[in-house]
Amino acid sequence: GHSRGQGEVSRKMAGAEVKDLLPLIETANLECLNQDSDHAITHCMGQGTREDDNVFLASDCDEQLLINIRFKQAVRIHSISCKALKPENAPKSLKLFADPVNIGFSSAESDPGTQVVPLTPEAVADGTVVPLRFVKFQSVNMLSIFVDGNFGDEEQTIIHKLQLYGCPGNKTDMGDWEKVAKKG
Image 1 (cartoon, rainbow, N blue to C red):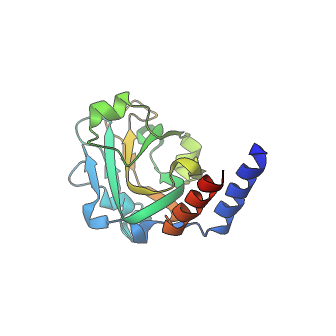
Image 2: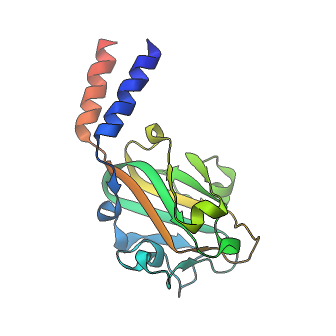
């Protein structure tokens, strides 16, 4: 039956160890469009700086942000956490794009994205970890995150910490999938 197959997938997911993906992120190539140069993307994602509440990522000329994260290898992204300590400047939602092609602000706004993660002031206040639709983020080499606005309709969006959780995208899984496909 169909449902039994889904159960197997979720068990497999539980079996894979979900960890902080920072070691697999190319931190030197982190990119954020419309960032304030004094409050750059590394402030909310870099080792050490992301733990420091005195530094943060801030938007520059308006409230929108477009973050591009490249991974050292394909990863499976399980969940995301966003911490923002100024509720009125905190992002309302994160629109995620798995392996986007030539993404810019206009396409980020108009495209549906891979998943939209709605946030609440409570969730961003303590950086609650939000699970993603894991099946849609199975072999991601680059993730773009679009922030459209914040809770207070402020000119500036501020993020203190952005963290991704998951595991390496396993090449062997693809082989297993092919075998299954041939059998079916």
